[in-house]
Image (cartoon, rainbow, N blue to C red; front, side, top):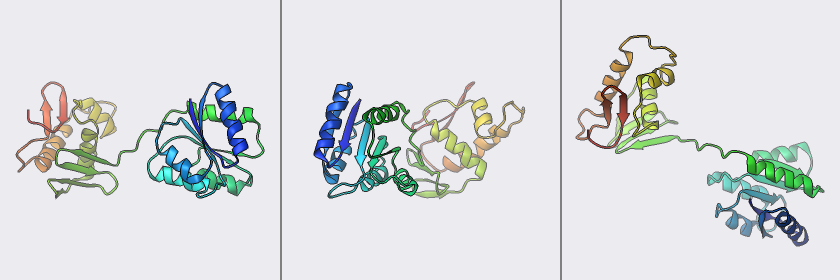
Length: 226
């Protein structure tokens, strides 16, 4: 495990670096906020240990900036501020854990190792693009070649699911369970009807079809001709 300690008290920082190494972990140290942020941006650390009060840039600012930039590295915030509001502020700023001073090294180590064991959160995708076809989940807008395409809610869900699995065959069962919430086949042509409508909206008038029928298997959306 590789840890970055951002702590302005050099004696404390050196103690943590030495102790982490003795515990079998690699540890680097930054003694001010600007240096700490620059090092954290490298993305090579498994856990960040960030003191809240730092010169040049405070610890919460570091965490907030990293989160805004999309960094997901777990962060343990260290602080002498122990009030409930202080802890809540630290966690809401993007910290994953909050440890107040003074602390026992064994507890700090246990918290660091617990953060390192957490599975990485899945990236939340808000926009899909296949060729010149785009779908924005937040605005619920679809366009192809820059031209807007109006879809009904079910058509939007259908296209979203197909684009999420672009390049892979999507079976009728997968569509029934994930787009219609059916856990059985109602023996209707509901999928065929919606696929036909969707194809006419996203492919009609364009030279290259994107929505393909894979005979005997299902459907696939991909950037390429049959």
